[in-house]
Figure 1 (cartoon, rainbow, N blue to C red):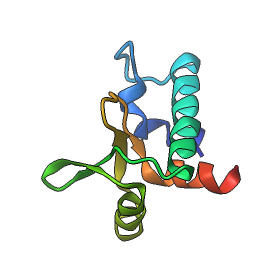
Figure 2: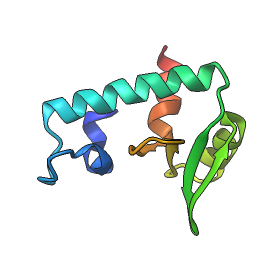
Figure 3: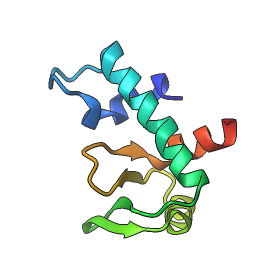
Length: 96
């Protein structure tokens, strides 16, 4: 799913060349799996991007609720510079 959504991974474009290279892709995949692990353990500290900007920190339960209502929502973790589509983290949880 990550390769099909490279355009959604702009926060991982460390060299700001508008392309996600293999190193940046690897970081995105690592982050997706790490966040899936946090979510499975029910850890808090989640942020989502809403109409008014960043919202949170929230519980994982709240993120799941928001993602059900808004499937294209982006999420992050408190103190993270990265944003991922929630659907990528949810898919990683299902595939684990």
